[in-house]
Length: 206
Length: 324
Image 1 (spheres, chains in turn orange, blue):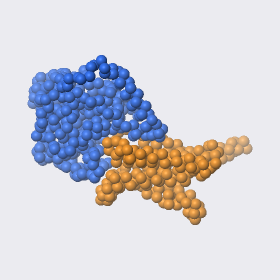
Image 2 (cartoon, rainbow over the protein chains, first blue to last red):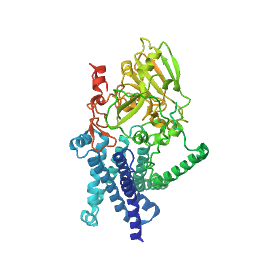
Image 3 (cartoon, one colour):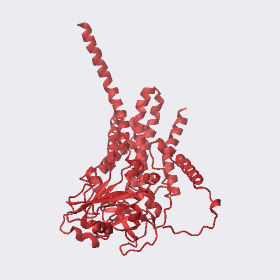
Image 4 (cartoon, rainbow over the protein chains, first blue to last red):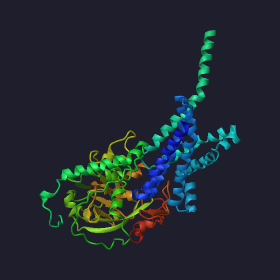
């Protein structure tokens, strides 16, 4: 069952790339193709990043534990689209003009935020193999918590670059808030429940 | 006036307009649905390909102008399917899609304020106000892309002279139509209005009188398409594109510097003057270079968008870092 599901998800994750490749092949990427590619790959990187963060809540809520086996693939696809996004910026947009790129990263807050998000994702992608998980042990989980910061800076990157209409970054931000909020809720609930029951116990014993 | 070739097909043999329009609409919407279904699922709408603008009516007797550049022009498709015109939608493909709503007739432009002869012009009177000229200008958007566009129009000064400004007229304030039916982008979203409508802009009197400043009523020899600001818009080629206000309904002559829309929204990012200036960066992106639509490598942005010889004298002694 799982290998088939994995294959299906893998193909699904490649659809946006296929769309982009087909658009490039037919010359159908609009009047400003570089802008189209930049936005398209950026949006999908963010979507996959949020999808990878949705795996754990979905698994807990549905009880379908096999879902966890899809998480690495989804995360790696987020990195795949983020890499396309980043290389579009370096190669197509600025054509290796590293002075302009460096200036951009230092001086433009939205570029800084996007760059941080990408840099965080690199070690996460590099340590995603089973061997690395074994080697790093407990530290692996600590390292991979950085994905929260990557997602936050990625949403900020999007929010800071829009000129007037914030509705799309706001939508991504709301989904991210929900996914992170769920984790906080799960983390704090036992203490809240424990506190409540100890309070009631204290009341009863009175 | 129409320039027509004699028809060699009997009019009775031609498919009635409603029928073929329906057919086109069907094909268009069917293919658009198919093409964008995947992307829309994910909340992306960048795959809805821009629709081809209806070929406009030809404009008669257009003169050439020495102010035109001989650089390679962008195609009609480039110019009419990649537009910043928030009244017709936020994405650059939206104005072409929503062009059908912006019906440019009837249309009047009220000219008022500090003038001896206030007057409301009908759009047809504006089209005949002065001989039409083709002006091939560079357009530099504040978002660091540019095009070369063959506008058709006449110097704004021709209109100004007709209404005889008083000595108090130091600035001109331009105002775009407000009509959410004809301009669907003006319908508020859940986040309210993206811009405080109407869109407004302003020029100093000497800028407005400058021979490069035109009112445009056409493009590529045809009536101006809706997505480019029909029926009449301003074109000020040495300033960022947003200064060239579209679909004008009111022109007021005033004593004090009038408000302008982007400046009201983000004063640190958009100044009143907004002259193209590679030395003054927009806080969020560099203005040193630009991408000419259709080219791969970025070009260096030119001071005053390359019109420095004609306009630099207007700003003599002004600190352009302060008055950006």
